Every structure is written in structure tokens, then in C-alpha cells.
Image (tube, rainbow, N blue to C red; front, side, top):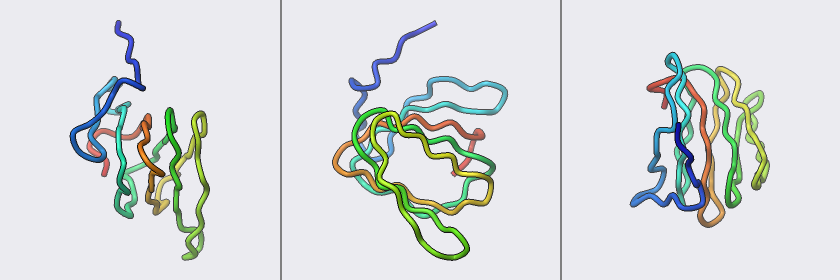
Length: 103
């Protein structure tokens, strides 16, 4: 048992993470970032929950790029095969649930 205070977590580099749990190959990680990630497709599904800050999530639908601005409490679900990239607006802390080893 442990308690994680997400607002206290700061990485030394963008997208640094702290492993919260690994449950049968599904990881839950707390990420800190102040820089965009890269366009990618996960190995399986991904749940991306903004805990602190704002993140503009870009994703592709039928080859067209769309985006949504996510704030604290907002959750993005990337279904299998969804190409996406997260661009924080300033600093952000994000909880990510995905298959172990996923990009």
C-alpha cells in the first residue's frame, strides 16, 4: 500500500515516469512533462488521464488530424490502432494505463 501525491512529482526530463503498479502486464504510470511526445500507436489500448495542467491531444481519424484540449480530470482513451500525440501546455502530470512495454 502506498499513496502517491501526483502534484509533487517532477521529472528531470520530459515524459519521465514513476511506476505506480504493474497488474498482469498492464502498467499504470505517473508522467511529468513540459514538452510534446512523438506521434505513435500503442501496442494495444491506452488510457490517458490528465491530473494536473493542460494537454492538447492530437489524434488521427480517417487520416485527418483532430485535437482536443484536456484539463484536470479529463481522460483520453486511445483504442488499438489510434495514432496520437500529446502536447502539454506548460507543465502537466498525467496518469497512463497501458500494456507493459508499449511505446
